Amino acid sequence: MRFDRAARKKQNADVYVEEVGNVPYITVEFFGLFSRLEFALLSSGYAGGDIGENAWVLWDSFAKDLHKSFLAEVAADAEAAILFREPARTLTKIADGGCEFRDAAIPKTVLDVLLQVRTIRNNLFHGSKVYFTDRDRDLVSAGIRAIRHMLDAIERSEKTRRIQAAWGYAHVGHQ
Image 1 (cartoon, rainbow, N blue to C red):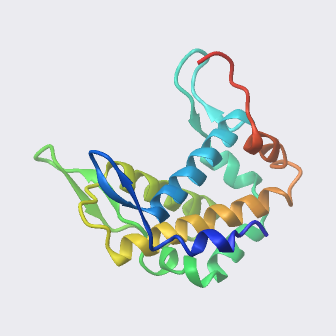
Image 2 (cartoon, rainbow, N blue to C red):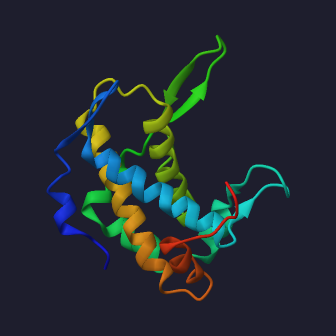
Image 3 (cartoon, one colour):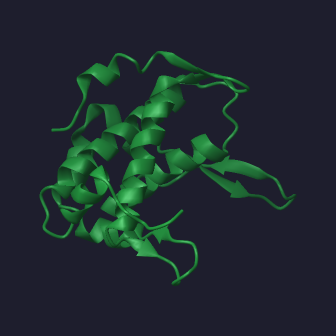
């Protein structure tokens, strides 16, 4: 398994960012893992969009190809249990033009879990995180665990092994 026990000690530490303040280390770890995973997926064939336009991850295609052990492993992981007990809420637009968080359904499929991880990223990036709560920490930790289970599961399927090469380095041309 890829689980890095040394990084776990830093989960309660903060990283100071000028103009922002203290950012929990666990969010830095999560963003690093998620962004690298997303890029690896895009560069290894799980890219949607039109030629010459913005690309996005084809989460449903990836979910179909991911080894069947993934869902059971995440569901059995005590640190990921919050995903199945009290999943991340979704930020939705409301009638007055603003946004509010709404409860999400309990994940039942591989795709549901992958979309939960994406929702955690979206909520961190787009949500109002003036105060990082224990629930936020639990959800981010669960997201990290799910990503690490994904990394293990991609090694078990011929269809997803190409993601390993892209994880290390993926060439996308001129930027």
